[in-house]
Amino acid sequence: MSDAVFELDDISVHYGYARALEGVSLRVGPGEVVALLGDNGAGKSTLLKVMSGAHRPTTGRMLVRGQPVEFRSPRDAATAGIEMVYQDLALVDAMDIAANLSLGREPLLRGPLGWLGFINRRAMRDQSQAELDALGVRTAPVNRSVEMLSGGQRQVVAIARSAARLPERGVLLMDEPTAALGHEQTELVEDLIRTLAAQGTSIVIVTHNLPLAFSVSHRTVVLNRGRKVADALTADCDGDSVVSWITGASVQLDAAR
Ligand SMILES: Nc1ncnc2c1ncn2[C@@H]1O[C@H](COP(=O)(O)OP(=O)(O)OP(=O)(O)O)[C@@H](O)[C@H]1O
Ligand SMILES: [Mg+2]
Image 1 (cartoon, rainbow, N blue to C red):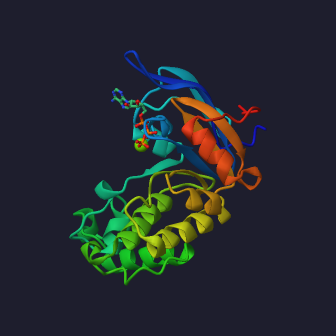
Image 2: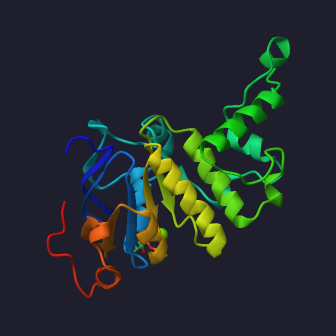
């Protein structure tokens, strides 16, 4: 199975005596949506931090598209095609959707004004609209300021922003992207995850929302006190078993590596 886009091998994270992760291995295939589940403190966020370059593992190794990688920062991860969706910090309220999507890669005007850093606003809007269209996202006009958006729309823009920076067969990491959202708004995010996966993006989503995990993921991975206790195709999982893996009442016996 060397077609994994992202492979973690025997990852441990120790904070002094505290063991946040212990020997976790994980494979993420192209276009695969992995639901990463577990109780509070199970190690989910820590694992995403390792995958996104925000935290270096104590031991273990990682491969991206078969190549060993060592991330010293989120920038290293981004270079390898791994993007984390940051929720609140990600968007600049006073700017419009297009400016938020283009942050750090704004198209400049031609000629001397461009050399001075003046942005080509029209090109920026067209580019942003095209990117949202490609994702099937219809939030609001791209010149709408982000502070006017609902929570769900903001989250969709934050995800689209990370997705727009990914290369083909990139990996998107999300830590509880729907935690603050209502039912309908969660559906916006859910649709976007499906579209991205269908386009070949791999997604690891941490969530406490089990119906969401069931409906959107191909594979279910459960952490319990820093260890991987289950790794199964979601279609083969039933709710009771998943809950018992999360609470620690049982482990999936053939927990695949
Ligand atoms: N900077 C840190 N220093 C010491 N211990 C930490 C640190 N960060 C996390 N931990 C510990 O590591 C363990 C895993 O934490 P983590 O945040 O990964 O859990 P989680 O699965 O994301 O939980 P939640 O569902 O509550 O977000 C916890 O026991 C936590 O207390
Ligand atoms: Mg967490």
